Length: 276
Image (spheres, rainbow, N blue to C red):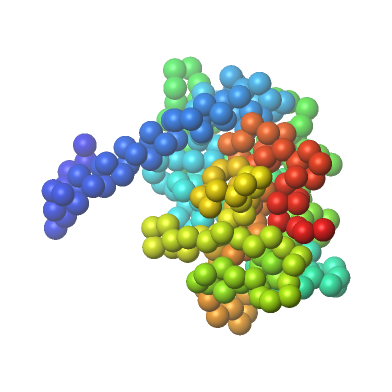
């Protein structure tokens, strides 16, 4: 155990220790079990197309218990965040996109730190310690869907830096027609399903219930809307608002094809938000 930090009380140190233990359990729990069975398991034990021979640690390609990138809006993020200015966004097409568009950021930037194809999948902030005969530095990549450890061009998983042909991200949900508390749709607007809203850890969150009979609670299979603060949003934003991001529809721990939060059979996932 590390020595006490000067001026830090025993209860405070105990709370920090318990928090660290909780995060480690979280990373090693059900999510880790799911990841091992998906293409996001990039270790030598992975059953996906691409594998890396330098480690047996499944979570380390995205998460680390220490030495994380604190700029990421994702817990314990272990990859360097790319610059938001690197990307061309949907609004630059000049089409009629009603609602505001924020700079690429939030959880979407974390997804793109691998899926824009510019960085190797093994380019992490905190390299894991060697395990047995496995060492990160001497590890090699294998698999037809990578080149030099980067996602190969032309794949659906390699989004690239031109985001104009993908679903818009960093956009206000429902064209910015929701007030912060509560999340109401303005009169006469019926293009979007009204989101649910609640306070979690003193932060307002939004989501779209995907159950046939909405249960009013946020689940991993719901469409998750991400809160953009005024500091990271668009020019002129006056309050925290719900935005659509990559992880609104995709869950990196999901067992669904394309890591969707739920099946899109019959466009079910699309129709969870869009009323058409």
